Image 1: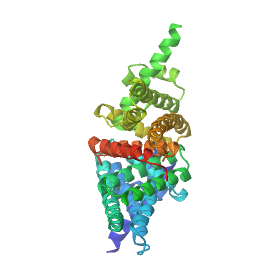
Image 2 (image 1 turned 90 degrees about the horizontal axis):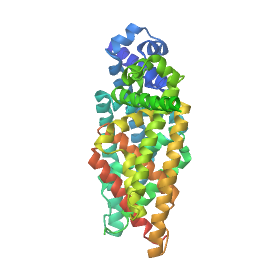
Image 3 (image 1 turned 60 degrees about the vertical axis):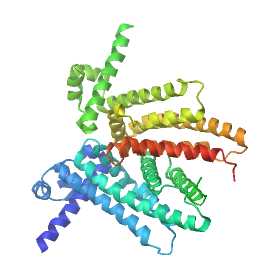
Length: 207
Length: 207
């Protein structure tokens, strides 16, 4: 089905153009006309791929979400011998988008989060992404704290609550690096100190 | 100086109109024309107050920042007998904008944070706000943990690191409530559990 493949390929090409424009100017700067020019396709081609600007934005958001999700999964399976604690550290670092090469992605993600506050379809796409991340974090925290509990006898934390905390912390750090309140190094220290305390608690008998 | 007062009053009136429009449509929907209509002043009046849209946005951001800052300060001095720990809990809850009546403010704040990623003047205003909040949080954490250390002998935490963590967590929670990933109640639980663990650690001898 070569036409199908071309269509999907073109949608991804357009999504990349949306992200580059959003990175440069914010979502405000994303017009169908500019997207067409940036992706080097006609306005008509953009309109055949997406009926509305919102549909185009939802697809672009899903596209970034997949990219981040793939990196997180790659970190989780990359070294099967790693402990759940190590895997969680890697996954949280990916989600926080602290590395220089992910700064553009972070800017675009944050623009989508802000826009989602006034667009229910964007909010729905984001919620699906966050729900998947929340489940992955909860699972890793459960595994790691059970391992610690087996070793020292006692489960001192609530994995779902800890997953919510970690995900919110990661997102807050992304924003604080973007606006220059924190350096990426300082944000990384905050994240790692938080995780270190998490494992310290998980190894302590519940009280 | 009645003209001066009128000028400042008009700027605030316009800032309020900016915030209401940003709440409804995101910052994308904020045009000088619509702001003038919403504030019930002429386009010329808006342009006499602010030379550019960016100048208007910076003023509006400062206006919200002041409002949040005032609420935080009111919580800190509201009950002089309260402990630093209690004051920090109140302050962090204000910063996270979790209450229903602050949802609009949260949407607008998040829109500014996202826009600041591509606007250095907005980023500068935000950094001033975050630096002030960081200092206030650091001071309260120092006070509270010193009180605990006096009582039990030992200082187990780094107030600056904890302030960074708390501020990022509060901001992440704001975003997660806005997109509907968390209910305000769930976000409040995350925040309070985090603070409870903070005080638990501060009362434990350093190791």
